[in-house]
Length: 169
Image 1 (cartoon, helix red, strand yellow):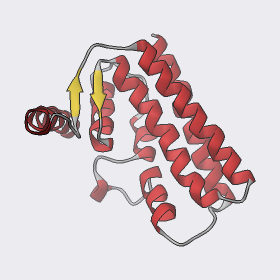
Image 2 (tube, rainbow, N blue to C red):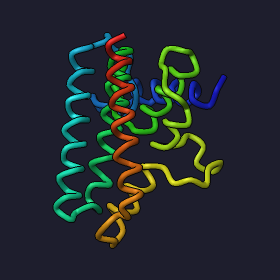
Image 3 (spheres, rainbow, N blue to C red):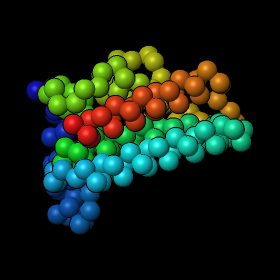
């Protein structure tokens, strides 16, 4: 069984246990597919991308590291909802999308997904959007270099575009 599939199974069990104990979860729950909710996640992703551009123009590019990440994350949530899952955990969302790619249900390059976040942190030297978000959210730098900003912005646009195609299939 792949690392992603193992993680998905762990996330499903985690959510089940938490729902029994606390009535809410921080994992992954199987639900009915919901295209309307998927479209709402796409709208939220586009909203965050507009905010990213707005912050950059206003000289708050450090804050845009978070908004561009959440733009990408909502694109991934749109995909999970389309396939009938509710995720309340970034690692679980990522593992599920990796698993859907491996099963041939989702047409996204794993390399693209690894730019957002990697399941194998120790195996990559490249910074992911998660790493960059954390660096600018928790660090003291007040701006992102223009080339890095552009790379993240284009990555988010590409992911939104691919998610739109996937939820319409």
